[in-house]
Length: 244
Image (cartoon, rainbow, N blue to C red):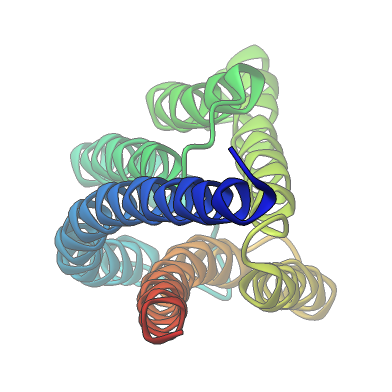
């Protein structure tokens, strides 16, 4: 074989290699597009479900928090003095919806931190314990101590879980992550400001719970938009490579 024939043979091999690489790339892209399409469809379902979660939690929190003057009583006091059943139903349903909603977001974003998943579960459990434990210090002072501990643990574990999840999102969706951190900051700062202004009453509790569910709803919308933009960019890259 002379040099000219060898070069022709080498060119044919290179062309075949490029065709194989192109086919492999196209296959992986199609597989990625399929998975992204499935994820986008699931995200739309979650977004729809999140609308229900948003409306229910906002309505139920406002309903239980305003049965008595929210500037004079905490939600626990309202629930333990005349509205016990409504208080328990609110706690159980809110905790269950938070648990389902957050874990579904974790699943869609492939977030598999077992410790954080446990924190979300513990948060919902502590909310359940909060509404089941009597808050009547003059009658059950020991129960009152546990009631306060459960309530504090609910908020702490929920915020911790969200911090680690939002930090994880920064790897692929930095803009969404930055906005989410700002959103969490607004919820926490607003809660503290209301505590300082009005004291330990239902106003700050209503703001915290409502703020969390609004934050989750906006986070879902941000993630859905980010995924759509990523899918569009991938299609543009593939089209450009194909044209070249």
